[in-house]
Length: 316
Image 1 (tube, rainbow, N blue to C red):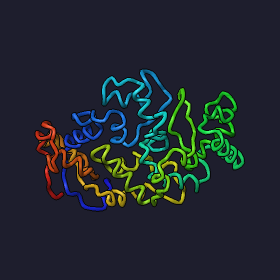
Image 2 (tube, rainbow, N blue to C red):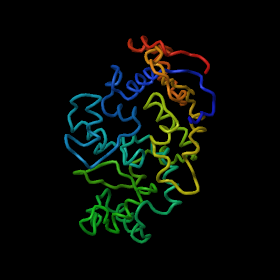
Image 3 (cartoon, helix red, strand yellow):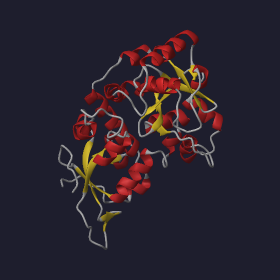
Image 4 (cartoon, helix red, strand yellow):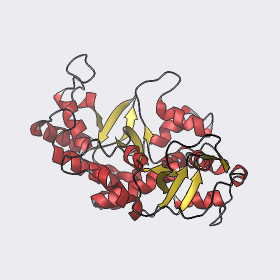
């Protein structure tokens, strides 16, 4: 059974309406998707996942290629990890991700949760953490290898005490990564990298979740409750006493998202030849995406969208 949003849905959207809004929000269609290059793409998506596996290219490169075309690899790398003017950082969102630097304050909820939990996967040692911080303070940005080595053995997760310590410090926000060298993280101190306003900003959990709900809706156009939970993995890397996933309804309301119902029995405004097995899917839409889709608020709707007569403002 679908979980109803806090507010009753204001709009009924067809499945085709939602597909088009999502394609536009993700930057797959529309001329505005190419404006601003890779940095603008990252801000629009809110997060780009990292992965060590590479066949054609690494995943963070494929995200840019799929939306922007044949962008030089150097331009992508520079947008994610600028050597002098950081505009992004790495942290846990959907998974290990590159995030716009201005999003730093809104992951405070996860940094606090991890600190309360006491560890991610490995148990760190307080003395080793202090040594890592002292070296970063004295020597500047360093990789795990430069700090003393990343592994004890050949196993992927057989980390050295130094690697465990620096990753834990990254988890709780005492260390930050805004650059890579040869796919190795370069660790630094937040007060050397972040603008003062970002460093001092410490929003509450509720404020963080409202901001991230808005970010997910902006990136997807239309979201269900499951989307809001999964986009930033609110069931993972949290403390046992705080169930962030249970707060998404209030977060969506606080973010000003528009409650909607998606009718799976309609396509392009026409009834489905087969009856739907379940009722409408309840969720929320980004108000800006709705305005663009309907041509309101100065938006210029895609011509294809205007053919979707299923987009109706009606009570459900």
